[in-house]
Length: 225
Image (cartoon, rainbow, N blue to C red):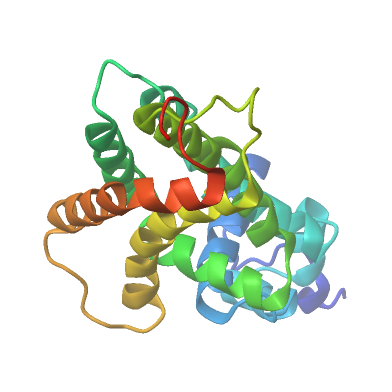
């Protein structure tokens, strides 16, 4: 008689359609990696899901395949292309654009699994962290930097290309707001109860200090001695 422990499905294990089983594995992997990081073993993940490791590998042949799917689910599916459109809509003041963007961004990413997987990825050197930061830099921070130039009358990037220093200026705002999530889900510290007010204060502080910093990084704007 076959050893029931080596079968993909046992009488005690609920049989699921392939799509349902895949969904179960992905959701379980998101929870698992958010809790223990990428050192977590697929054998333990399978045990938690009450399936065998061979069944898990039937859906995701390698751990890297599973991590790629986690990235797609947690990060890419929550990314909104309209963020860039809204940031560059000059019919609205730059202050309000930044506030609206960061309010929506915070509402989208401030999740236990989002923050913790991101941090674990950076510590382990997994590509999730690098891929997402490149996306933020190339889409969001570039847009913010260009809008800052326009706001203060600096040359367009086809005249003076954006520098790493300018992107670092934009990172300073992004990082200050993102850090609240680290305080909550990594350090388990209290965070501001009114995140909208927190975002508004950070945006206003950033904008009031941006011009002199940009003058140092880029030079005086056109038409200014």
